[in-house]
Length: 131
Image 1 (spheres, rainbow, N blue to C red):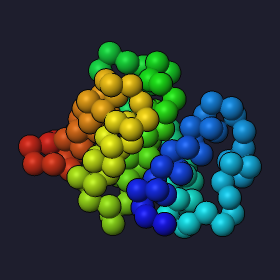
Image 2: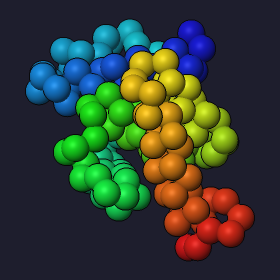
Image 3: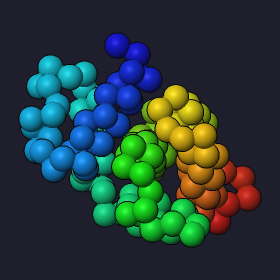
Image 4: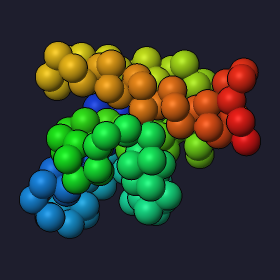
């Protein structure tokens, strides 16, 4: 299974958990690929920090106002930016923008790109950023 598909599966599970409150153990197949499970449980493990960063960089938006699907696309991408050394910055951002393009409103791709770029700059992950 391609990593793009695994990212999408992670976003869907996190979205369902977010919206329904169902336990992740019910939403994540035990046979799910390792990368998918690492994304899901990594987001959960670091959710407080991830959500704080999203809220800080989503100018004019509180975390609660961000649509659940976009919020979980952002969570997976931020997890990859901060905790996955094997995922290049550009890949994490491009994959998130692609998901937003396919599954969200017309404004979502630019919003997702802007939030992720802001986090990357603030964390010194791109030239010209501060850390």
